[in-house]
Length: 302
Picture 1 (cartoon, rainbow, N blue to C red):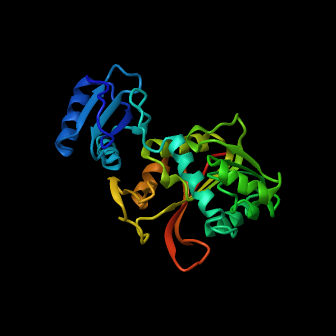
Picture 2: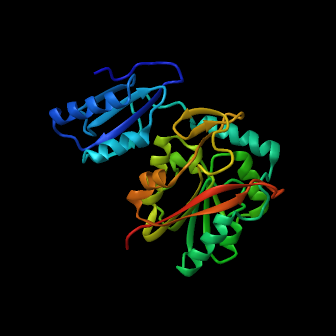
Picture 3: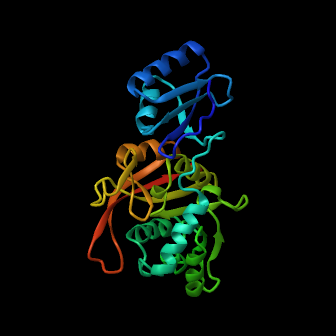
């Protein structure tokens, strides 16, 4: 099997960890996938401990591949490509993008909390949440509502510019860790809840899978994942250059993945979904436009 071929940046590579242990079954699965995705380079490595299926194409429909494998009774999930890691959305690229954004626009969304944060606050109060982690902290507009209600908040933010703005407003009341949410740079601290608004959909499929897994592992028993992601019903769906299924790159080079209920179930299902519902969020401080979001609430078993 060819393990790695360097190609243009237009080629997507996805790696799927499976529970296939039989070469005959593997051959049957690969044949079916190759018929479904004509032109894609698809291989299976039985000798790899992760029993991986590797797919290379200009367009890899990860959700469809997982759906086919599940229908065949095969367990699978997306994992990072250790041999040829994706260069899309690297930590350095994301930091540069967001430093430029916050340098130019400062408190671009104002200081009022997102509707998702208002609703999360109600849930957290009702369930005596005391310790909250906010990945993608930004300049902290969603933190104040939690601290005002006696919660201890820790933020993770990749942009030094955003952290600088946050420090001017919170004056040490909130701990902010500078780093990437896909490489969460902290120890074994666990939280009652992890709140994330407007971030997950900016990551590629592997990064989203990594982030959700790491966040879940940093929850206390009974803890909540509370994520708000942009919906395919949003008015900006389809804007820009399509680079993957339901993923579009805008003129600033920012990649956005749009969710529907199927992709919510695929990505969050293993983490114990308790609720999903739709909300509208204002586009900025003017409040003249809004976008459709999907809130997903998961809870870790006690």
